[in-house]
Image (cartoon, rainbow, N blue to C red; front, top):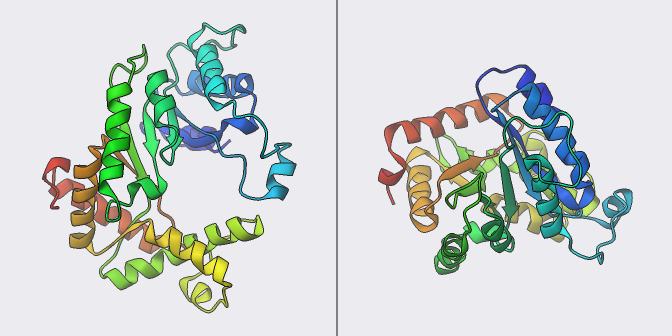
Length: 280
């Protein structure tokens, strides 16, 4: 629904879902939805595919998903790709005039599937902790590139790194601005709810359990944050280790002006440096 809403109010940017958790949706239904979106907004719609079943038992029950159910993600991706390419057992209406670009979302375990299917991979999570284990990050992504099988829609391997990037005038301010989203993620993991983002001061005043605090700090530590110089240096090291083709920054915070400022500073970093010349 949001893909259609955003596409209807824009004219040039690409829009997409990052992503549809495919185990929770029949591949044919997803294919029909995105084929229709592609017909309405040709050349502008992307489709990211994930395999998460939901964080908590109540969510999984609401989705009619059993955590112990067989993992059918690879088969589901292949089935969906068949419908969108016109080679599936069912013909879509409207039939896509061009292939909807597919991306496999993964914390690292799905890179083999993406390589075998000839699809771009979007990597997030602990695999991007290059300060802790850059060798593992390189090995996983080099493995993806070496095993990649070219497909009609994707002749070459393509790596997108996805993480929060918060830029502010100081490192302390940037760290604080990450708190609203980090708390919402902690609440989702521990309570099965995703509350509206709260002001930084409200989050700081919360009496968190040890589990909530652990999840909050995991989310915050997984982000790149700091002033312009610090963020540029960290991005330079990240791109050097991963060899990424794209950066997907999905940051959010309660203060919309601060978020706009962060996005502007990030754009200035890339405006001042070609990716290969970023410091670090």
